Image (cartoon, rainbow, N blue to C red; front, side):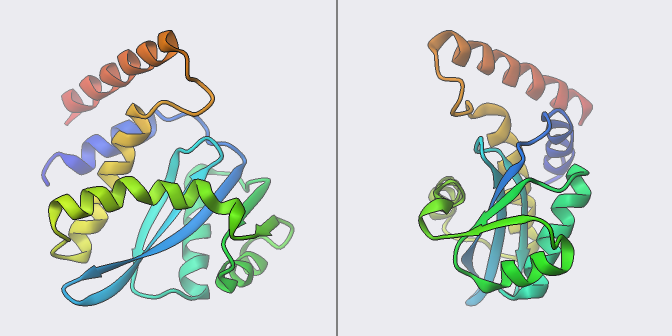
Length: 178
């Protein structure tokens, strides 16, 4: 709780520029009997770009995710890929009307699969106590996952070994900064 956000911030600063195709998705999370929506953006290489916990699943929530993404990374992507939720299209028309938007269930597997490690950890932790705690957890979890998971385009054994060494060096420097 004390050092997690600082370590996540240092790890996120070290990330390279993300790809220009973003996959957006949302998943429902129950906290104390109330439903919240965890909105997630992933680039085409599988790196988690942003995660926002919101109480609604509407145009305003989708717009908040898009604005936060574009402000954080400093550019508009070439394309966004979403599921059939119409809120994405309405938010895109307000934020970036010229943006290419593909809305199809089968194309969004990259974002759907990025929820799996979160769900696995959620089961182990037996749920979450508060929305703030969940937001802190997912930001830390995605920052460490981005550092330690090997991108899909780099799969040889030697590349994986070098990637792990780089990840541990990044972790050591982030932990020293905290």
